[in-house]
Structures are given as structure tokens and as C-alpha cells.
Length: 347
Image (tube, rainbow, N blue to C red; front, side, top):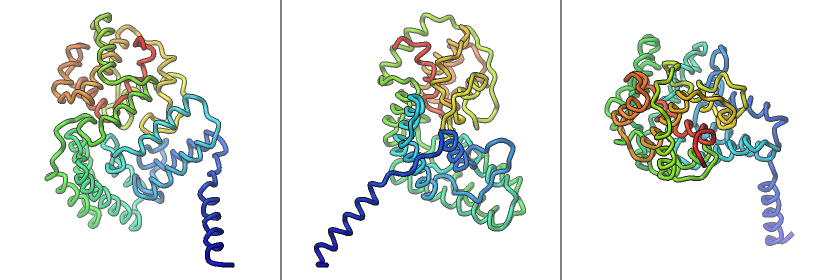
């Protein structure tokens, strides 16, 4: 066999291997379970301890496995709502989430350390903390920084860990190092996504998915303002968890009939599909309109924390504490309030 022919054969085999489609999951439930398992440290399931015998969040292995799972889902027959969420998650792979391997709404360190401590596990946690610090350093080169809310949350998690694990020598030293690193860290000026490189595009993708409609933030502002003028300013009866492990919108919809999803940030639910079937009281209609207004204000108009809080207090006659929580929630879970856009806004 001459050299040219051999190269042709090898190239053909390579192309066949590359074109081979990944095998689909046996069912959507099986796919969801695999993704839940991958995300155990981000979203522990039930009361079971977190196992760190797994791929750690946002490592190269994690990103590769998650991408493979998305590819397998693409080969399956999905509902329209499931397809929309999958496409949204695939688009999100292009954006800078991977640089922030510790999502600030979740105490990942506490989740990892809730597993039975062993020397090997402790080493894995130490490596993950080093990896997270390195990722933040790499992000700076691309003009990507935590905002002050995210920074404050991470610092709080580390302080709590130091108190709980004061005697774990190697681990404590790494926690102290990371804590000192964050003490010198300068957060970005804007708390919204627009303060990130490619943040505006990332935010637009979230608006498109949760609302189900392609509109610019400015178009949404006009529509929201028209509806705000038609609704009375009545204080809602707010109920929420003090932490941010689950978004306010996911909590609000938790009693509605579940529609299964694959995104840990939506508590593995399809929020737009569930919101469409939810009945809102006049007070809650005003609440969701105000949250959508705040969401665009924070992530597009670069409102400060104080500006966003003042707006919510004015719109809803709520306490400063409630306003603080809701603004933080909008910062940590951009766009989710727009799950109610189809029900509340004339599109």
C-alpha cells in the first residue's frame, strides 16, 4: 500500500469516527439522573451526603462530560420545552461560566465537605480550591471578575468553613490561602451581567429562553413599563428561603405541577412551561412585573444594588430585607423572572 493511499484510508477512518453520533439516553428521566449525578456538588439531591468520588465542578473533565450528555440528548426525541432548554444550555457553553467554578449561590465547599472526610477526599477538595483560585486568575486576563455580591458570598462560605474545619491542617491552609486571595480581590463595578465581557450576549440568551421571545432589553423595558402602569402597587406576601441555593422563581413555582428539566439552576424544572400554567394573584402579578423590571435594570442598565433595592421598595412596598434578597436573587439567577413574561406581557 503506497503512502498516499494509506493516508487516505486513515483519513476516512478518522472522518467516520468523528461523524459517529453519540448513543442517546434510554429516556429523558435517565438523562436527567445522569446530569443530577454530575452536578451533585452544585445541587445535592435529597438528604444523601455528597460524594466527591465524582468529577469536580467546572473542571475539564466536568465540562467534557456535560457536553457529551448534551450531545446525547440532541439525538433524542424531546418536547418543544425540553428542546428549548437544551438549546439554551448549549448556547451557555460559549459564555464565561466556566471561569467561575464556584457559583456564588451555592456553598460548594460545604457540599463537598459534607461527605465523610478521608485523606483522599480532603486532597480533592484542596485541589478544587486551587483550581478555583487559578480560574479566577485566568478570568482576569479576559476582563472577567466576580461582582461584589458574589465575592461577599464566597468570603462568607470560606469563613464558615474555617470555623467548622479548624483542625484539618492541609485543608485549613488552602482555605486560608483562598480567603486571603479574595480579601485582595477587586470585584467588577457592575453587579449585572453587562459588566462581563460578552455579558450582554449572555444575558440576551437568558431573556430569549425564559421569555420564549426574542426581544432586546430596551423593548422589554417599554413593554414592562406599560403593564406596570396598569397594575396597582400592592405589597405581595413574600415567602422564601434565606439562602440562594434555590432561586426565588423556582421556590415560587415549587408547588406547581412539576415539568422536569435538566438545569441545576432551575432546580431541574422547566420554569417557563410551569409559569404558563400558574395562576397569579394581582399582588403576585405586580411582584413578577417588578422583578422583570429589576432584572433588566441590573443586568442591562447597570443599576447598583442600592438603586435596585429602592426601585423594589417603591414598586412593592416591601422591607429593605426583602428587597435585598430579591435583588441578590436577580443577580445570581438572571432572566428567570421572565418565565412569567408570556402570561403577563403582551408579546
